[in-house]
Image (tube, rainbow, N blue to C red; front, side):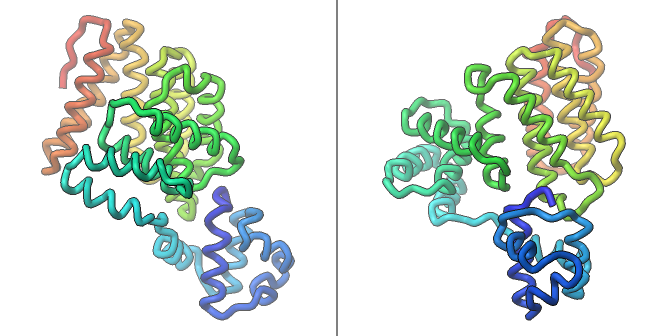
Length: 308
């Protein structure tokens, strides 16, 4: 399934709500012991097997997907709910103070630690605090010791990598993360679309890390490998967005090395973002275009102006 920590417990809840017994659902597909282990999130199942179990519940894959979306909302902690009110008010000071208070609690859970990391990234806080640095270390160690990442851990790793330097992660580790993303993005399988989005964003963060920290040769290689993988598939949701994001990373790689082909890629990216900004009445698209332009200008060593 690719995300064993999610589907087993969701399937169990669905089975019980519909009144099916373990032996009836397992049928001649798998043993009841294997099904029990799956429902307890102890193992994963191939998609083909899982779809047979759904059939034994008189369900289609689409039925399950709808149920999955409705019943796998990321658990919202009381802390996160309270913090969102501060986000709406635009009070960065209150957010920082509340996050510090949360980290000082002796019984703080890992979910709250991830929330703190997320909110600090959202407000782009640039201050220094031993509490926040210790929180990053704890999250980093927890994620690195986890063999199979869940949704929250993936997004936590994205936040860590987005602000990381070569001192925080080795190039070998980031390269392994990229290869893991390739393995976990399941094209054409809509049961995995929710996790595909998370792994695509992790892939983009990792490629940006390579570019940002001067690993140009590896960044170019992995960007091109990503294009090859994407071009073979037709069913990846948000494919144009990811394609442009990766094209922008490759453009930065070339521009940093004074390669003129970076200008052509940058023009392609900026034209795309400018078209969206003009067609869609949403300030976020204009902001994204302007940020891209500024970042591309910062690394442009060719002396050639962009045209879009």
